[in-house]
Image (cartoon, rainbow, N blue to C red; front, side, top):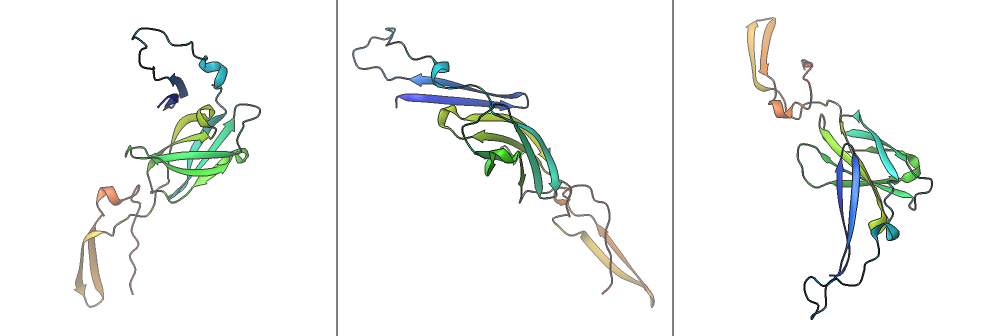
Length: 184
């Protein structure tokens, strides 16, 4: 289909959006013939970045605080969309919206001790803005599984012992700092 198409590239250094107008040639136009000159991209679409993600920091074991700056005087939109995903997974991005002027937003319901990739977009069709991409890690959390190989035994009439192995490494959700043993 004829129209404008855009491709965005994001990394730690920033982002770039390249746009191209694709025109379907009519039958009878020979290959190599030049169609009517196209309007220059820069005259129709702005290229100034309006949002810069400045930090992504762990707030809790299940939340990240994201802050951003606005790098132009008057962005055309009032809503910012944050895109995030676990960095190691490489899956689809999930989104969360925030007021553009707030310059801070907390993303909740995340996995503990996990690094996330985050970038922002400001809507506006092909003229919208795409920010740089940043990473941040949620804080350590409680293990997702109990200790394994738990053994209890009697030493004498007044003492007993309890032995166990830690949960599997991939379920620790950070550094294992201790256990809480209580009697009921």
